[in-house]
Every structure is written in C-alpha cells, then in structure tokens.
Length: 130
Image 1 (cartoon, helix red, strand yellow):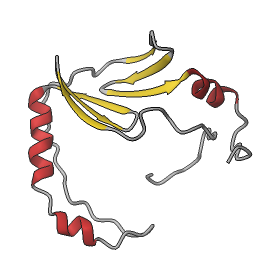
Image 2: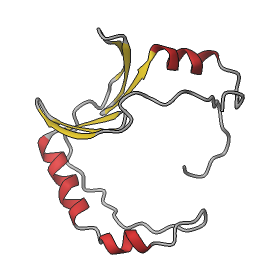
Image 3: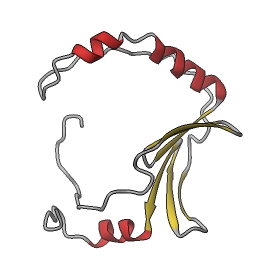
C-alpha cells in the first residue's frame, strides 16, 4: 500500500462484478482483465511485460517471508517502451448494460452504479456494513 501519510477517504463497498476472472484479449491492443480491472497495452509493451515476468524466479516468490516489514524488489526497469495507449485519459462511462467504466490512463475499473453512489455518499470510515 505504500507509506500512507493520510487516508483521504475510505468507505465500504460491495464485492465488484466480474471479480473472479482473468483474461487476455487481443483486439485493437492487448487487454489484460484481472478481476474487475482492465489494463490496456500496445502489443510491444505487453510483450515487454510478459518477457519480464517470465524472467522472475517463481521459487523466490513462493518462499518469500511475507510480513508487514518485509520488502524485496525483484524486478525493476525504467526502460519501458515510450508508446502508451492512453497517457492523458480520465473518463467515466455509463455502459448500455447499466454498469460503469472508470478509465484512468491505461486502467479501467468496472463498477455498478450503486458502488459509485455508496462511495460518494458513505460516511468516511463507515465500517457498519461489514
């Protein structure tokens, strides 16, 4: 989660739709769907990520002593491809099926209208629904 200075807003929301899927779609670019998130990549960038992930040591990841104070960077590069699909996009879309897409650059989050309304109108730190 990073080194949090201050939580600006937090609210309880229901489990999102499409929360148990992982797919990769090839279309105008490459779409990686993971749970209710979608990341979009140009072909070259997706191949770059795929090759980088293949280079990781699965045993190291499996045996790492996961804990709040444990940390080890196992992949780092600043040599990403220059082209990105949507560097300047921030957009909310209402879909024909009744749900919403929130696009932020190459990330898409899917949510029901009720989830947006819960977040907008919930009291901060509202844990009463848990």
